[in-house]
Amino acid sequence: MSIPRATYDPRRVFRFSLPHVEVGPKTRSIGTYLSGGLFALSFFLLFDAATLSSHAQPPSDAPHDVVPVHMSFVDWVPAICSTLGFLVTSLLDKSHLNAAFSGDSWGGEGPAAWRARVVLFIGVALMAGGLAGSLTVLILKYIIPDYTGYIYYGGANVAMNAGIMISAMILWVSQSGSDEYEYQLTV
Image 1 (cartoon, helix red, strand yellow):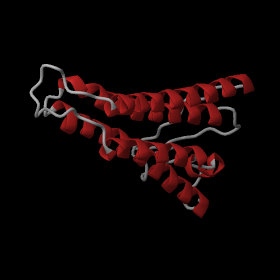
Image 2: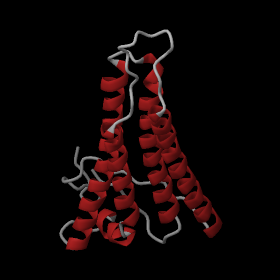
Image 3: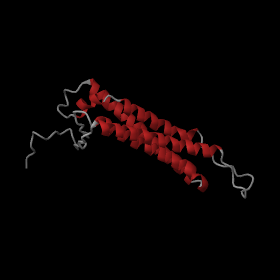
Image 4: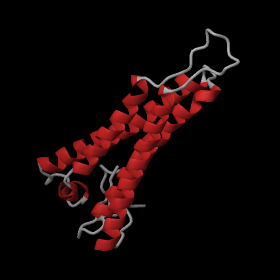
């Protein structure tokens, strides 16, 4: 059995193509507003948990040596990482990715395509690291010590980081869907 040479590229393992979505100006603005609303709601969750944490009191029937759990800087580090990742991916010039993911020729790509790939990777890695960090904080700080009354703080942190990641995806699709080119992700 021979492999057809016209479509085969030995450097590619998988070839993915994002679905082409016809996005008009109205749909583009709806996606942008939806992304911004989800971003704001995500931060509201974290601010709500931080406010509740700062006013936390031990139960009245608890012994006097029980100290309530409060959110600290460790809880904010994943949020900072996710926010930086959101900003990096949002500020990326998507026209450079057209050359990066077009798949026309591997040798003819310029340095702008490689820089765009690196910047996109850094942004997505920051968001994924923020989500993984928030899960780690939830498990190590709230679930393992069995702080049953304070799990909301860790859950709000995870929901905030997941919301920022989803918000970035919605913004990416809504901003790139109305362009004339199509992204093809290649692994």
